[in-house]
Length: 382
Image (cartoon, rainbow, N blue to C red):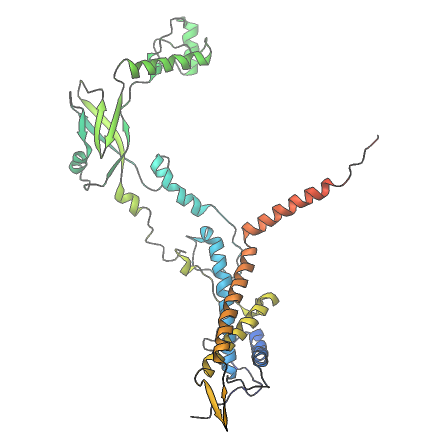
């Protein structure tokens, strides 16, 4: 086996010593790289025991630790802000951006309810008309759709305009004045078109409402009121038409509902978590809290690498004995430490979420109010 040099006790970082070179040009990274390598070697037992790693092994672990830290931080920010980011441009780096929450995506999500209610949304309601035949009660709107060039099954009826005349036009008021003065007053209110004149002026409003309700109730109980039912686009109307005419309705196309909800021309917009424009962090801008985590994670990665190296030989023969290497101990410890450090970082990030910060502020406010309630109120004598 070739005599491969191992950690000699010191190192000198040079650009190009890391696999990806993400931070090689960062002067803070250049300064800390050798310090971190020495820190890891000492924590792994050097100089009391040899450390079968090279300087580039430590630099690689250092680069990976910084990248992992940045990934965790920015993944947290994506989760925190994605509703405010979706649809924004991907052309700007968000590493140092402050993202203020907005309702853009929430409103976009709620537009689907506007579509169904006919009060907005992204899908148009179309208008159609159906010829009513004398004494024919049932109509197949799919047949109408086919005749109108609409694909079978694509039609969805949203509203049918089959209503009795409003009760107000059946409102007879024997007490309404018929003099010119009264009619002029009715005209001034915009009610002059009703004949005979309804009592908008003299009686209390609740009288008019009760009278209208009585007319509507009479139409529903004493005679076949205007109504309809739709089952699978089969329309049945009440009462049965006694004359020919037209029935109007509004509908939407199911295919348009689906196609209008998909924006295929969003190549320059944030469309999923993979293209949110966060990049690797700038090491020089990471504070001491973050760097402390990075140093610990670098040590864990170095420990893992050393375990794999020592696993190549479970034991080393020496005169009259053999030395058993601690591969399993190193790998078990590295695995546990990596998990603990990631969980610690995620818990720290979670504690700084908007939800947790607002919750903490609310608790502080409650405690302050309780504290202030213990302050005696002086009696002021003027």
